[in-house]
Length: 180
Image (cartoon, rainbow, N blue to C red; front, side, top):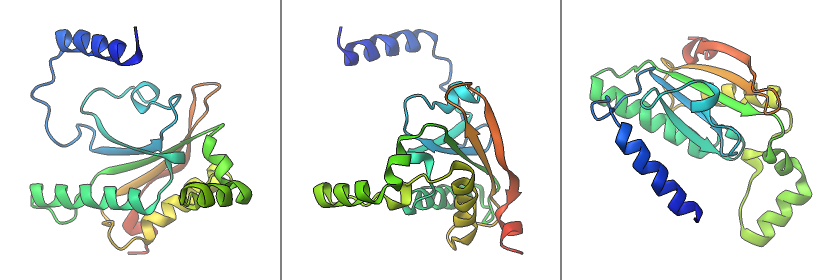
């Protein structure tokens, strides 16, 4: 059985138990989790999320890149328009993990080789030190003029060896971080 056949079989099993047709469009926990694409890092398993609990955005390293900022800003704008609230309130959880492949991106020789071979710049996704990078990513959200100050942001670090999540940055409103 190939992987696609296995996935379709698992979907058939999912359909037999499916009871989520009436979930609201907005996440039940009013939360967006930005995390890494690593297959060992699944926020549904790690954080006990159920279908419809949170919006999950994934990229290399779980970093706040320009694309991630655009995704978060778009969601905030949509929530604001659909709820008639220009200052929507929801949680943004940044979650990186130990032993991340994006640590390779911190190597300038690797960055240059990738840029030369594929034209791809991974400098925004590079992991140097998870704790420091998570705090920088919070600052990046706070500095972005397209992200509403009404959003709350926090940072977590997941240990792939123990399964434990540790809080690196406690939840704070972006407006507080901006000094408003």
